[in-house]
Length: 171
Image (tube, rainbow, N blue to C red):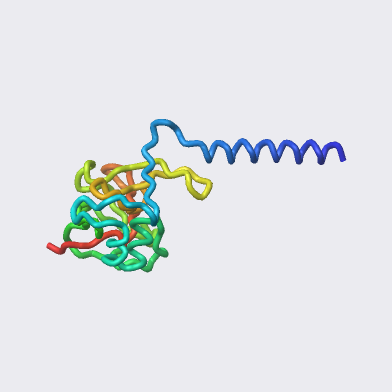
């Protein structure tokens, strides 16, 4: 019985330590919090969140402004081979070129690089008990997806982006 109590105490201490570590945010992280009640304005069109709710589909609003995720293999661009520029659906900021798009097998459009590193912002994301790097539009702050270090060369990066946060301007 004593061994079980010690084991239980050890597991509880370890769990508390892990939860605390996951909940802490480092001082140098640049987490951008945009909630459905936010009044952050869209620079390009000067739209409030309420006006964006009218402009965007419910799914676009959920993904872009509430940091949602579309279901894998359901987005219109995950398997698209069309050439062009992928822009932010909210503000039109050109984000990714079809020249850097590749099939990652994940069910979301994947790119190995943005058009320009100034077009996207990266933020530490500690949601859902894991540490990831969130990708947002640098112009309007809309959530796009996440970036991982398991992509192809020449960068080794995989920008895993929600189709619903993108609009393809075809060449």
